[in-house]
Length: 499
Ligand code: BES
Ligand code: MN
Ligand code: ZN
Image (cartoon, rainbow, N blue to C red; front, side):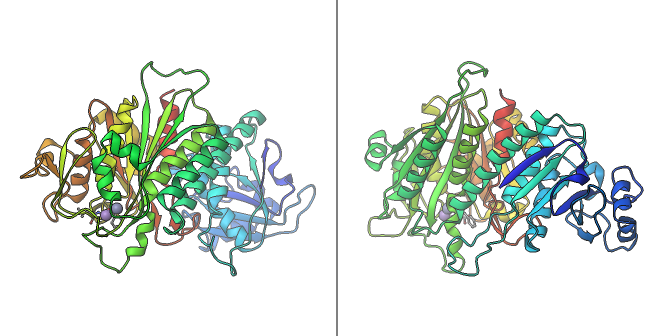
């Protein structure tokens, strides 16, 4: 792939197509469109008058014209942005992705992009490149034929009057983020016979080595010795040994508040059968993505290693398989977590919270003062919020608010649910400290959160339930169906804003 910044005359780019953002309700005579209307002999005005194209978000219109003068491209692709007042820098990623997928389908392998945004050049370039890269991810890794082998290989990002150094920087950032999102999506898409906990740990180690991150893998014997009885109770029914993946990014020179340490903690259930509380067969295949939270941690740490923020960040992934077996945990078993709390396991399918209990405690033991855990934790969050918003809950309102802002600026939706003490009472057990489920059919997503909260001591903590947002059931103009890599851009914002 080739990326180039352009600060001069956009129309003269040596590419197959020019791509221009068009806002809803605009006139072809508007500044920024006029030039293209002229270039195409009035085609822009025509198509905009024809009701065929109104600038709605995701709409496209491809125009062919005879290039003249120094103009090399012979196609103009108009991409609808929706209303101008809703447009954000992150909309440029959607614009770029929509154009890329549209042109790729037509074997057009290069384009120049004019976003018509007043965002800083660095943000325009970053979003354009990230959208270009993430839009070309496909699910068909294991096909031997009929693979999607088309690709757009060249993107020129144009910012009139932009500083070339800013463009270059933005391109590098967009590449780091886009490739890291795809790294996460590739992991989430892997079949569970291939991506076992051991393989997930191996890939983490390989990535860490390549990116210069510190990486430790804890094996089961170590976890048992450390008292991780909650995590181990999930792994015990599987032939595949669990791995606790620990990653650390340290800046060359830190500017963060001394003693502050952010931890990203992920649920890495490589397959969730439900255990002895076995899931129904229908749709169980979807549970290969139950390691998406862990994959998000790995992808975010990868991006951070490249972006080099000036604050340290650690990543913890509990990679575990949840299987039924003669040795598997039974509903009514009682186990002791690393923090000493006893848990009555009433449903072995509520396993994500069991592994996160020990993982968040471990993160705090490593010195974390702020923790974000992410997990495909509950079916209930899909009922509540669908696939548009990630459920967010936490013990510190300012921290939650900050994360919600970081998400909005990344073009992602985080929606808060309450975790008041009344809810915590509902997971009190008759025979142990807590039980791993709440009352049937009531506030399932919150019950997961208040359970995890029991294992956070002093740290500020937020929990992201990404069960609805980590997988897209259908393709979008800018994105294939399948794993989305949700939350990575929001978390990068969080880290970069704490510098
Ligand atoms: N991994 C599932 C959550 C899930 C379900 C994600 C459906 C995506 C789609 C989780 O481990 C689980 O099984 N949760 C149970 C909890 C219940 C037993 C309290 C659920 O949501 O049904
Ligand atoms: Mn489960
Ligand atoms: Zn699960």
